[in-house]
Length: 257
Ligand code: ADP
Image (tube, rainbow, N blue to C red; front, side, top):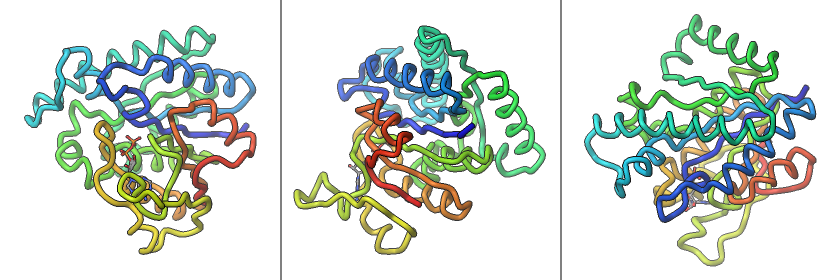
């Protein structure tokens, strides 16, 4: 079976007005369930706990206070998983939750344990849904942009599980030669074969309002992917069914291979 990791960002899960993008989340559940039924092994890496927490508590802005953010992540994570559980079950697909922290990946023993758990779930035909344990991994929240958020986690999970492909969903078609929010003449780069300094320079600024990592963190993730001889596709999470197109070999977004 082909093993595929999907990384979805906050901007694909939450609408600009702060409400949940239920249509997109349902599309995700449908697409991943269908692929799983066809024999692919799907793994979902999801962001969004804090964003969903804001939604549950009817707050508008991400608080600056760390403990408040942790509390929001704890609230949001339950809601997010409850939603995934509900929507995947519509398509007769069982899901599970793994909350990882950086040390899980850093120490060989816990790393092995995490890999074993994911393999066991997949052999039971259950889709693992993975997030960073934001409620306790304070250090990572403090350096969120610097550490590259869940983009890096997506890449690490791809390596950890020896998956064939990482599909990284964002709020944009792919990587452009310059920040398309600033430059009208920015062009989509279809293939990246190496993360050079020139490529790193294309990524400008922090990114969208609800996204956290920006393009830089996606390129950092691509570095991990290249180092491990894996493949990554960066494509638009607003059209979830493009996951199917990518898997069917149709060109969508930017290929890092
Ligand atoms: P997500 O939450 O989906 O992970 P991010 O907001 O973290 O998304 O990152 C995507 C954003 O990065 C884009 O919407 C865009 O504003 C910004 N960006 C900066 N430079 C580039 C570039 N060269 N190509 C594409 N997007 C870029």
